[in-house]
Image (cartoon, rainbow, N blue to C red):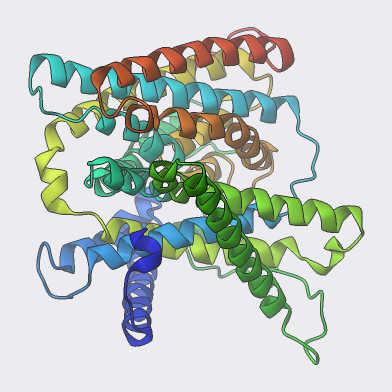
Length: 464
């Protein structure tokens, strides 16, 4: 695995961290002072990533950094972020709205996968027979799951003869972010003007704190609570050390599984296993939190610290993921990628809007905006759009959106195995992609039946 064997000096690592950090601070200033970024609520991490892409080696060449190293950082930051997510409380009872949101997420992900495969196979049969249909499978990863997962899965395909997978996954994810913020803000603003938002009557009602990204209110919100005495140890140190220790455990578990596969003659499956190490990291973190909860030890953890650490890791992850895009590869696949993204955006919008109008009893527009933002970007873009329609988070929409991600993640894990079948089972043959399409379609039918049984309750349609 390049992510584990890449030769990297400590000095080079620190310079890379300093570079990304400087770009993040520049992103903070740009969000604060540039009206364009304030209007569309573009986060500092996204600004930093695209700024690095522009000044980097493939465009202006003002800053010299390695795309390969940035990709490696994305790989490791993904697992660390998932550990932070797994350690957070997550013991809340899921409301029916959260369950519905979770089912909408997995349904949308499946539709995005089918669209991506459909476009890719169309290109193969009618335009370019040498086109790799795996690009279509990467579409739902970049749009529906984010850059980290898209890169981790895509770069794992390099062992099967598709080394461009990681960069293509990041390219799709970057386009997804642009769709989430630019079209999302437009959708939210139009809905507000038409009176569909409960808490906002004007699209300009967001306060300066949200627009500029700098909090001016007094007193400032509390970020975390102390669970250890600083005279003994910094509480933040304990939380960071636990994340690092679980990461070490995840590495050990993955290494042991890889060794087991090798011994039984399945060494060719180990690249896929290593690309899924973030899942093992998340499951291990979740298990640790559950054990601590049952033994009454979880009072040593504060979700505020975990939220902040997870947010820090996610900021560097998103910035590095955009900087890791190879523009040469992106240009070579640009036509099919743009076609997939355009069709997927329309399908995502129409599907989520249609379902939201018919499912939710309360705050249907706010829920629609939030889930649309998440299924084209990440949970952070979904929450940013919710804040446009609900500036004070007075409704349960934001919390439901976070809780629903856990439901979608649970149902989505098996799909991450399925999308590897064309490489791991069918040796890249076209029949493998048709098999995946059939499995995804069958799983969609199963999800809809399960949703109808446990979550879905039809209500009177409310159009917006």
